[in-house]
Image (cartoon, rainbow, N blue to C red):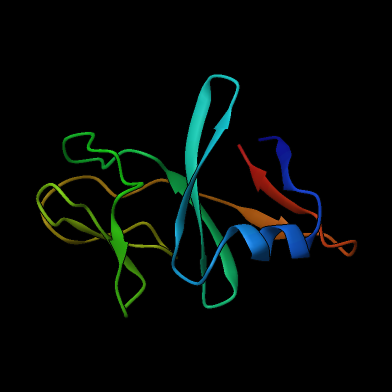
Length: 107
């Protein structure tokens, strides 16, 4: 696991992400999504585990579940657990905010 800086400071992160907005991040050959949920940065895989539908057009509901736009499978963004549907869970990547405000994701 390697920590990768994705935002230089917290101001940059907050200006890029509104609450429950989903942003696609491309790092060389790896793509993931990030969202700000209840003031926590959540990073997760970019494709639904069910049929590999891109999740960057998905919605996040009031229960902090991301809902796949294809078949409405739901995954809790804290645990990655599948909460509606029959497939594997969503991969969640650890994030951290350093004292200087830089935001990192563990890949």
